[in-house]
Structure formats: structure tokens, C-alpha cells
Amino acid sequence: MSTVTIRQVEARDNSKLASIIRTAFQEFNAPTKNTVFEDPTTDRLFELFQTPKALLWVAEQDNDLLGCCGIYPTEGLPEGCAELVKFYLSGTARGKGVGKALFLKCLESASALDYKEIYLESLPQFATAIGMYEKMGFRKLNHPLGNSGHSGCNIWMLKTL
Image (cartoon, rainbow, N blue to C red):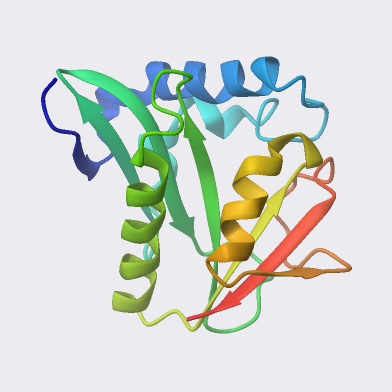
């Protein structure tokens, strides 16, 4: 098996990444209403991440996309805070360290872009990811920050870099 490459998103990745994201919701039986599942930008991730101070990293192996994770300057977040977004893996990539590598690349990028905090939103169905966030220093909040447009999420977390 060849090594996993982590690179920035390209336009050709859009449809495969949208499929990985939506499939994860179905596999974990997560609610889709008012989440990234329904968000039309999920089909245009390359274009979305042309925003200044935004980055989307993808993991690839043998020309097959395994997943993605990004940082985004979501409107309404406190100064110096970005959102960890679009963190999803294909079923075949889970449990192999791919997610952790993407996650760490995002934290490194956030620091390089002078962000001081990282915020995220999630759902209870993604308990494994939430456990990883907690181990990596995220703490739960009792209310959302910013204006992600994903009011269906009910877990909010923050980490100081």
C-alpha cells in the first residue's frame, strides 16, 4: 500500500469530497437538516476555499481521495478565531491515522495564518471525532459561535492554539 499524500484541494476534487461528506452522514445515521449535508457549498469546496485565510487539505492515496479537513474564517467568529470545517473521511480511511494527520495539518496551518483559536461544530453521532477533539485540547461550549449556517449542529467546541 502506498503512502498517503496530504495536499490542498483542487477543483477536480469537488464531487468526490461532496460524496465522502454526505456518505459519512448516512453511515453514522446523522441528521442532515441544517448541516453541511444540505449546504450547497459542499458541492463547490474548491471555490469556497479560495477565501483569504481559508485552507482545505485533502488526503489522497493511489489517486483515491480519502477525506478532507479545513480551516475557514467563518463570519461572526471572534477576532483571531477560525472554524475547523469539512472534516470527513471515507469509511476505508477511518481508524488508520489519516484523520489525525489532516487534523494536525489544519492546526499547523491555523497557527501559520496567525489564528489564536479554533472553533468547531459537530453532532453526537460523530462521537469518535468528538473524543479525538477532546484529547487534542478542545473544550465544549454551551452555545454556538459565529454564523456557520449549520443550526442543526448541537455540539460546539473551542481550542486555544
